Structures are given as structure tokens and as C-alpha cells.
Image 1 (tube, rainbow over the protein chains, first blue to last red):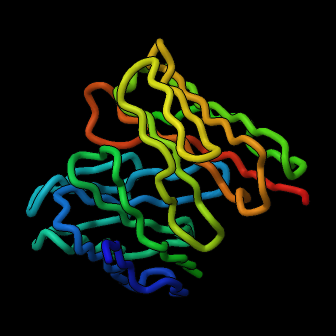
Image 2: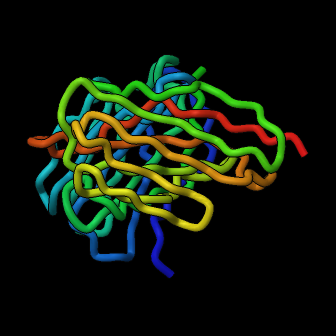
Image 3: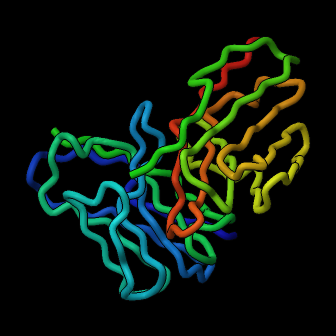
Length: 113
Length: 111
């Protein structure tokens, strides 16, 4: 089954404690991206990757890092989380840059206290 | 970064009614997409539009890519309770590398 898998689904952490949210897709997609969803703001892109070892900033990259060492995985790293990073995070993948069949993961709800 | 203007923000309608929502942008888009998000889930693609003027249906859903390439609408006919959720428009700018999303329309259906 074609899917994008994120882990964990829920996470509560403390300010400053490094964390990683994993994302994996099994569709051999080149393009992957991370979004955060906040009430009234829709989905805002954090980072995207057009292929292995190719990553670029989206609209709200501050406080986040990503890596793309393999095609299927695109982890999101928060080196020093802060409360304003409390949000719902989605990973997505698609065949080409941002087009049409963007498959989304189920989301990771992160709370930073 | 740019955000699309999506309206209305929310709708509370009677089952069986038709629904209409739209998105506008200040810049030209070459792709418009409509997604639905159920509670606790990620967005799921409903309709994709690639050409100005294109009108596409998916069951009770119909969406159009505006002639100016700066707007799109989504209509849902004869709404049912399972239509409840958040609907997002998204677009790709003419020379961009990413999708830009609207803020979403929350749809509630009264049965």
C-alpha cells in the first residue's frame, strides 16, 4: 500500500531537548516536504527536498533542520525546541516538485512545554 | 511566504444543501489542488487542475481553474454528513518549487 509514514504521532517534550520526527515513503517519490499546520494559517512549508542530498528552505524554516540521505526518508530535526514550535506537523511526498499527487502522512502532534 | 485567500473560513449547513468555497491569489498559478482533511488525519487530494478554465468533477465535487489563473472554486452538491472536515486549496506558482496552501474552510453538516 502506497503510504507516507510519520513517527511519532504524538510527542510532548520540554524546551531545548533535541528531537527528531521521522518520515518515510514507499512510492519512490523524489520530492518530499514538511509542513506545519496551525489554526487559521493552513499548512506552511518548513523544508522541502527535490531529491537525495538536495534540500531547501520553505516558508518557515527557522528552528528546524532536515536531511535527505536516502530517497525514502526525510527526517525533521528540532535541535532546541521552543513552545512556539508546538504544532501539527505533516510530511508529504510526490513524484515531482510539489505537483498533484502529494501524499500526506497522518501527522505528528508536537507539544513543547 | 505567500498564502492563498480562501473563503469562507467556516460553513455550517443543512444536509442536502450545496456548498461552494473559493481561493484567490495575487500571483499566477499553474496548478490548483483541492484537499480534504478529516479529524486526526492528513490532507487527502480531491481534485487536481492543470489548465486555465479547466472544470473537473469527482463524484459530487466539482472544481474549476479560473481563467485568470489566480483563482479556483470547489462546489459540493447535495452535502452529506461525511463531507464534514477541513477543505484546503493549494496552488503551485508559475515559477515556484512548492505548494502554497489556503487557510482552510471548516465544513460542518447538520443532519
